[in-house]
Image (cartoon, rainbow, N blue to C red; front, side, top):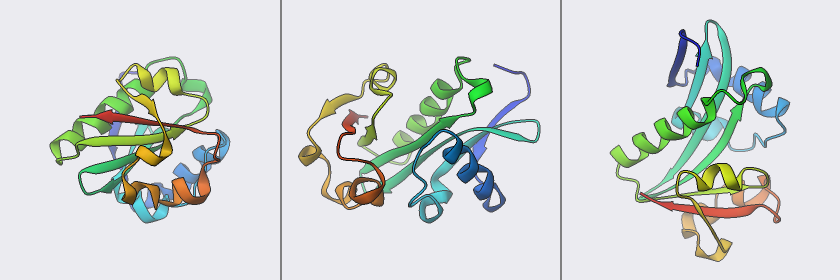
Length: 146
């Protein structure tokens, strides 16, 4: 990791850079503005190089929008973002975290996420934009108990 890497909560002025990064890595952006206060970004200097978000639903949460700029992949930044997000979720009383993925099941399994049927997801999470429209039905649903 670079010495001048900062992981921090988003600021309103980060929104355009986050949406651009999500588009660059082909991740959906629907629902991001509505939950943006629950996102973290990684920044190196003045460049936003990573993002991760969570949508809280009581004791459940939806992890979404983990993205790392192509030039920074393979350096452990995704791991740093997930660990920080899960740490904060635990501290806020979240008991289980869900996610949908088409390409990163092995990555998330390293944190203890396990595949489940979509019907096993918390009802409030099932009503999220991510579950309803943004992520295709072929995506694997995963859960982590905190």
